[in-house]
Image (cartoon, rainbow, N blue to C red; front, side, top):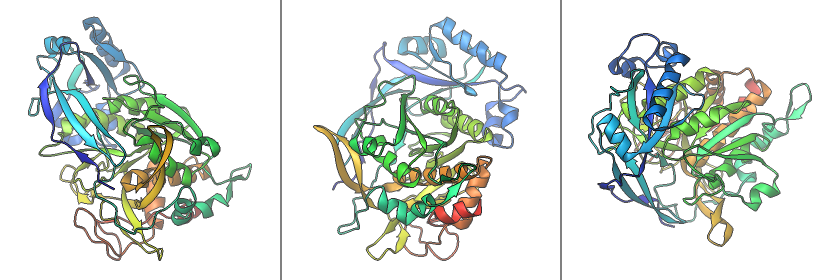
Length: 456
């Protein structure tokens, strides 16, 4: 099976009527500038950089008065969009059309985004007094495998093999709470933000609880043309079959999709199987600051955020954020031996000094996964990659939160890392080799749901 490939980006002039999505960072309550925000923004300083609601509503009103469409969801930032001609006239920057062809093991598609040309300076919104920075959004990379699978590798099946190997199956036989419910994640909301979530007999036959929603800048959450979201949802349910799964299809603006997810009332976990790369040829921290701010806002509210470490990319965001649980990948062979997956990313962030990625790992092995097919629902044998590993860890986090709903994100991270099984063999795509104890290849090791559940 061929690997996932992306063509070199090609740029051409945008049509004047093309829509450009952007996010506004509003001015905080206390005076600041972008340089300070860039260097000091963290979970501990978050309250210093949040706008008051009056200032935020003023920005919304000003954008609407100028003719932009504003998506008013609960968020510390403001998401909006408008035609290229309007954006150019107001902000003095001219967007272009970026064209990228993506070839996956099951499809080939062309992805078109309206973005600012590479190297364009940050947009300082002089005509919006309450705004500090304008960021033009673009879609992230979805963490599909970049390496071809190893010939003859074990092919795992959902849900049984995943549940058994992660220790989730043993956890499901435990009970918790006043009603002595099985430890299956019941009552815990987990949001998965991705490409779309097609309906499939696998999900309906198991009677999994899925609420499909689309962010306001995209349509029909049950359409997954790429496909990716349909596949990775299976790993969540393998580990936590009774969660309330909020399947959120994202468009050009993942910050908007994130805020959409965070609004669900019983939400406890958000799972992100996608990434941006920072540095040469990638994004800048300014580009990602609206998403960073929104993620920190959710974590401060008690929502655990789990993100893919990546599949061979370095400097992957948001996994590199200190308060996000970064998930790498492990492989399993026919003797049940666990080793670092050779397609996974592992790195020390240059943006957040001392931050090693990943924290923990889950199964990235070749596995059978449900997908939408040209003639109807289908299956594919594919490397699960860190995409599926991430939803597995999100499911394990849900098991812990069912047992103790008072757990904060830092508590969930502590339980997962202190009980993970050490991985001592294998080398990642980034060239890091696993060894005894914590290492950069696999972090604290392979997640063990039963051990983690037992300590909370």
